[in-house]
Every structure is written in C-alpha cells, then in structure tokens.
Image 1 (cartoon, rainbow, N blue to C red):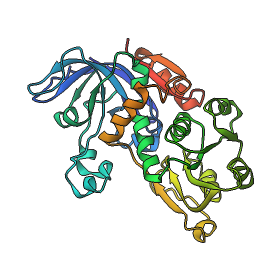
Image 2 (image 1 turned 45 degrees about the vertical axis):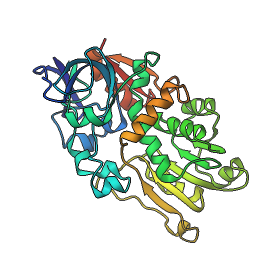
Image 3 (image 1 turned 180 degrees about the vertical axis):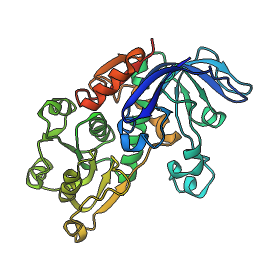
Image 4 (image 1 turned 30 degrees about the horizontal axis):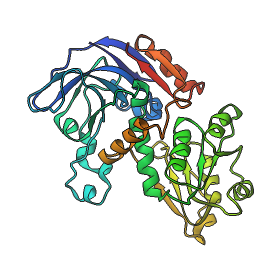
Length: 335
C-alpha cells in the first residue's frame, strides 16, 4: 500500500509500506477519504514526531476483520484514532481524553494511508458504520465535530447561551453551527478576514470584524458573552477575547500554541467578573456518537465547511492549499 509520510520541515512523500494485517479483534480498512486537521499543519508539533503518517479523520471500507471483530467486510466506517479505557479516575470524572490509554491507542500507520489497521480497543469502543445517506466527506467531519461538542459541553453552552466565536476557519464555523443547534440564543463570530465572513453569516451568526466589546454587547442584546471560544493561535485575539466575556463566563482556548510560547493576557480584565479560562482537547466515544448522529440527521451539514477535495496522489498540494489559508477544510480523496 501507499502512505503519505511527513518528514518534517513541511516535506511530504508518498511511499510504499507493507499492507497491514488485522489481528484478533482488529480490522483493516481501505481508506476512502481523510480530512486535514489544523494539527496536521502545526510544524512545531509534527516535526518532533517525524517521520510519521499524518491524518486522523478517516473513513473507509472494512477489508479485513480479525477474530472477534464486530464488523463485516465491506462495512463503510468512521474510525477514531484514540480511545480511553473508561475505567480510570480521569475517565470516571468525564475527562476521558486525558486518559493514558487515550494517548497510547492509535491507528496504524495514520489516516493518510491507503490501508489502516485499527487496534482492537478502538474497534470495540469507537468505530461506527456510516449510514447509507451519509457522504464520505461528511464522515470525515465526525472527529472534528466531536471535538467541538466536547468543548461546548465543558464550557456549558446550551439553551439561552450567548456565545462568541473568535475565528471563522472551518472549526470556528462548526463551533457557530453547533452552538445554534444546541440552543444558543445569540451567536457572534469575530473574523478580520472579509473573505471568510459570508460563510459565518450563512449560518445565521452575527459577524464582526474585530474583538470590540461595545459591538459585541450590542450584538448580544446589551450584554457580554456567556462563552467565548477562541479558534485562533493569534496572541492578540487570545487576549482580546477576555474583554468579550461577561460575569461568570467561560473563555475557552480551542487552538494550542507551542510549548514555552508565552501569551500576554490581561487577567486583571476578568478578575472582578470571575471569568473562567479553559482549554479542551480532542473527543471521546460519547462525543463521536453524538457527532455522527448530528451529521446523519442533517442538523450539522458538511456543505460550506469542506471547500476543497484533492486526490491522494496530490496530497502535497492538499497541504499547501490548507497552509495557504485559501481553503476552509481540505479533504483528501483516495478514489
């Protein structure tokens, strides 16, 4: 089989690797499509792992099923790249993405390969057949959508929430769509790039060009936000977001910065309002099930989020396009 191998410094090559073999409880899938995630583009993160096969948003067809695996040949499935143990203290506290098993379990060799071996733990907990009416491209959104669902649950987004999303990339747009679906009263999206604003408006959000507290207050009916979700690495936005949060609000940082990189934050701006700063990482099995259901019944739609499809043979072009900012979401198609 062929796989796209990342060597560091932005360099990718397509190389031949041995075909994987399913062991007991495992499956092997032939990949149909895989989305490119923002973390795939973070050179500071991926270079430390190179050489590595990137990609963790795959869908594919089961072509091998080991003894005891509960899937049949030909099943079209979503595969989650990590799964928790569901038994440790962190899992019992609802923080399953911090579980040691979650970090250890992973698909082999990665989503940007023609064939993927899925470990037995992942097969048992977080592999799901896609319904007939769901496209492959919608299936690639299950994992990122699940991450957003988990984050919004941690932040307390729900009926009556007034929410601000900072950044209208693919994740920011999904954040806005999900907040509306789960009952937010008002959603504001902050996006300085005028080319990206129409997609947010099409979701029904109020769109503003900057983190202006006065404009946000006007858009939210005379108050500041209950939840502010920051979907950008920009230091200025990470700080400006603090001024958009109302009393007892949550400011959630969805996009990471490199280890050791310090971001100046005006914490005095939030002290008297008891604003909580929060981060969120990945998604667990309950989140992926809910994400699959939302996509299957049309509450969340792939259209408008996925803007580009690139064949696997041109995977290097897919990464260049994603890095350029000229696309919202890029999906690699395996044909």
